[in-house]
Length: 207
Image (cartoon, rainbow, N blue to C red; front, side):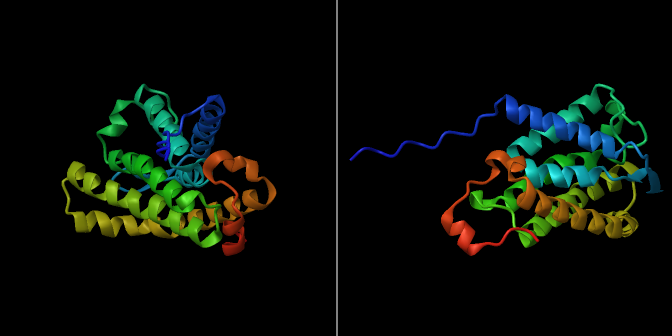
């Protein structure tokens, strides 16, 4: 009996890198309208929506490359964050944990939305962007914000409640956008799911 061939880790090609670069631009563009701070210099922006879309469309690997590239460009000084912020200083300030949360969150989103190589469905897309794009980002951001600002974690948590309604709206928008792409332009997802007869019988595309 011939032993099974071990699965090879996915390799990024030029198309994957191009798609990652597109989402670097999307996330940066979503910061163009600017931001406003509600507590301790942590801004409300639309850029988290870009992170949600990157994870749901690109998947965990390419999504992580996209967000990671954005953060590297920010670290070297490019003003790609909302309000024209950039530079190493943002990684030691109150927002540092939220930026880390973007990187962890995009992976979580991709894993949930495309679990088992399945095509996105509306409930898993919403669950993925909610957990990865909201819960994970807060879980990474609040403790570091609390540490940097020298306040209690409970205070930071209460202050962040102001972000929740906007983030829920972003999660709904991301779910609708992903659903429209599944129906109208499935090539946008490329290798994040493999069409299967069983999957098509068991799941309904995002509506």
